[in-house]
Image (cartoon, rainbow, N blue to C red; front, side, top):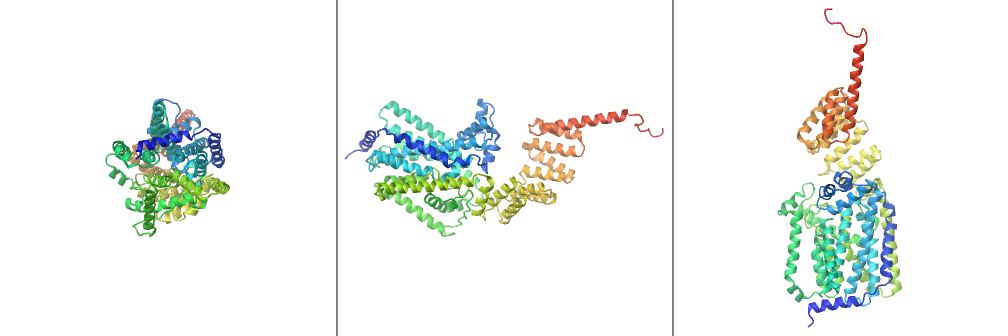
Length: 614
């Protein structure tokens, strides 16, 4: 009987003998890159939205002015999400080159997506060539290109490319595939020197993927699974002889888990639900339905089914809703099919495990949002290849194959371009989400915020109030705060104050709400109340002392208490609040002018009052 080692060696030799360098090896990647730029050409000015503001616009750690080691370190690990240093550094690089100029950020995202498509083509080409059923290398090239092309133009990936902060996701996927590709190249390299080079590149790429987003934690497992599937013919003898390396992979996965979750992961996971309106059990049950929905989106990604804010009702039990148990049974059937197909249909089997395994981190117990389309970016890759392989086997006529491919590519490309049109500005995107998820409070809140940004306060108030009417258990304080801001902008101060007080009562730990309340009270000439609120806030939240002192200075200045105003502005300047310096200069000038006027008044003949009794 042939040994597993001989079987693997024969496959590698066979691959080397069937790898001629053809012109289409270069033409295919060029075509992919050009097509990506055409499809995403209308996104270069798509705005910052949602998490972009927190992680990029308001993230002062990435605002590099000099490329010194301390600034670079701060950008990498002092940013909002410190566990993704590489992604943070790319945003810092954008800011260093052009600050908040939108096209620069989108250009990098588009380049990452194009590069991922090219790497996927190379990865698929090797995989198909290693598979025993793909005897003709030219055919493997064409099939690999078809699969990579379909994945690259797929409308489901718009969120990963056009939503700027999701560079974290696409960057991790790019390095993930690069690591897989380099591993395979290292395995087929005939010279030890090249093997070392490729394996080192694989290790480096894996670390870069992990430094972009935690989804890359599954990489060691899938490298091992790929080796067993495609290089070792699923040999049990090979598994028995490699128990120690497999144990090492298991230990590595545990180390990665401890790095991100700590030594008490259960406590950390439970704490992630503090800001959610669902429990751990409810999330796990709901994710069965979500994963099935992801599968449906891969096969039918019409723009009407794509949404930034999907409204997914929570599963409260295995039978409520009843689709929960049906979804679980479907996923179990899919997993079983993966096992049963493994011997004879390895690409199809591997695709199933790849899809389910790469969704495991974000679709299981961690208290993340229920659903986001960008999570399918990496998992969908092998599903697309499996579909291409099945279509290739079912369609015998070469012309029919080409016609179907062209038709699907045109359809997907059209849908991708149409979906990107929705992302062109914040208002159109928010309208799209609210129309598709009318009963989701956050979708209504985002639409209210978008109307507020363009100065349409009437519609803004209407959608904020609609969001409140949906009784959100999380986010009600922010809705009252936003309503307060809009009403204050309309000079409806009494209503604004009422909403600010409600927001403060719901979330007393948010300084911004209390500061805006005090500012609005001062506009009503209720200076004593505003001053007391701010001084109390100063004791409880010294981390925003600079802003508080600045607002106290404004209140003092409005009352003519210039000495007190100068004191507070000076304190604010010392604490680095950016607007305080200008306010301080104005108060100093006003004090100087007032002193000059008083001096001139005293110098004027007949202006002095007579003393009593004279």
